[in-house]
Length: 270
Image (tube, rainbow, N blue to C red):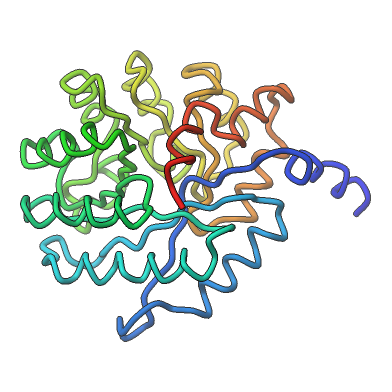
């Protein structure tokens, strides 16, 4: 226990920003699941995480309507209103509803959210997303995108974005800022890293339940520590453990935990 507490000083004594987490609906989708939200805040506080960026994507409906993503974002606003010190928000939209999605991004930005979250409704390089990306460039906010490889859930998530989609759209929009979610979330992470290696406006986060020992080390070797963000995505304990055990320099770990390259976006939020 004493050795663990010594290791945890990395979190307790340094700034830690969690760039990928979620609040959720109640089981009947009637509103925010406050029990889960309260437990999340309790967990990140216990781990020394200073700020956690949350979203509430509509995961079950590829065609979710504007009223659905507005309602989802209202739950995020409720959560960050109760926990302004611990939580910040990202706005979820379905780009298929172009005008409504752009209006919702502006509404959430005006309310203090600091970026947007996209799920698997479309590949990130689909032309339907171009107006959404252009809106994010206008507001200078990052785009967190659910990512993986099609072989993982081909029937459930046929439009999940992989590294090749990110590389394509990053070259088309060099002024946009993309977060390719959970490099440790499953799939061929080495292939993913090779795909985005030369795309400086694409970063990734270390959220997810995959705990392969080389993954963080190879991500830093391939992209640099400044292009890896700390995140948890429903795996707070495992992700803290991955960072504690990673064979990385203390300086690289601090860079990842603080999200140094993304600090300016954090300052815009509530």
